Length: 304
Image 1 (cartoon, rainbow, N blue to C red):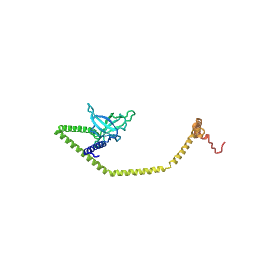
Image 2 (cartoon, rainbow, N blue to C red; image 1 turned 180 degrees about the vertical axis):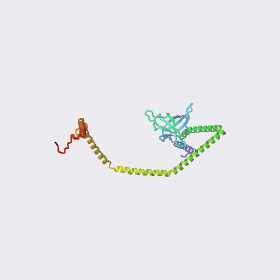
Image 3 (cartoon, helix red, strand yellow; image 1 turned 120 degrees about the horizontal axis):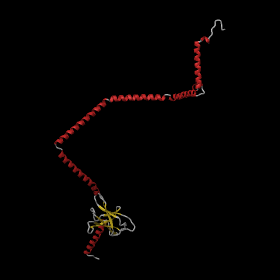
Image 4 (cartoon, rainbow, N blue to C red; image 1 turned 180 degrees about the horizontal axis):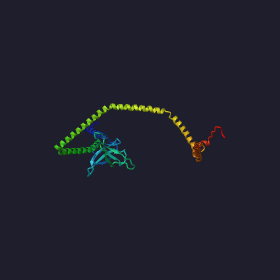
């Protein structure tokens, strides 16, 4: 069977178109042979999201963005998603736009929620969310710093403007005089520091001698302490205890009525008898001195 050139050309063109369609969809991450379901998400803005952007779950591509359009009678944007039909999750799941890298490529991440009886089906609208990218985070950090810098520059400008107005020639002279006074004060402090340093250097020898004397005294104290440690203090205290016991015994005997001395001290009648005897003895001695002949007889011829 011979085909005409026209038929061969038509078959070639048709085959090329089919291959192109399959290839284009393959490059987009979708396949005409896979069953898919269509989902929607509505955003206030899409931050540069493009048709063909990947739809991911936990880093795995499950579909693509197939269309971007405005919601009727609104400025909100409807994003159409084509995902594999075999991927099941709840219709309450979120579709989050996020940056895929530093260069700023965007994709949509499905944050799945699994609930019985709420499996997503074609035509459902998912919750929408936008995750701040690196550029936006940097801008958020820079904006407050920029405002503070602008405020600081404004304050500095105001200060310089006020200074140029306030600092007339007389005020400038006063400031110069104050600076000169401060310079003199600093110089005086430096001179005082040098004097103190010189004095400490001169007194260094005396300080060293004093330290040597202190060390000598400390050594002598150590010797005295050693001698005190070697002194038989325990033996002396023991002997002292024995002496105190003897004294206590004597005192106890004196206080006791059974001893002679104790009786003499403690009993009044013994004391009175002793005093009476002494008085009688004194009278006898006095009488002997007065009348010796009464008690002593001398006779040349013997006693009559």
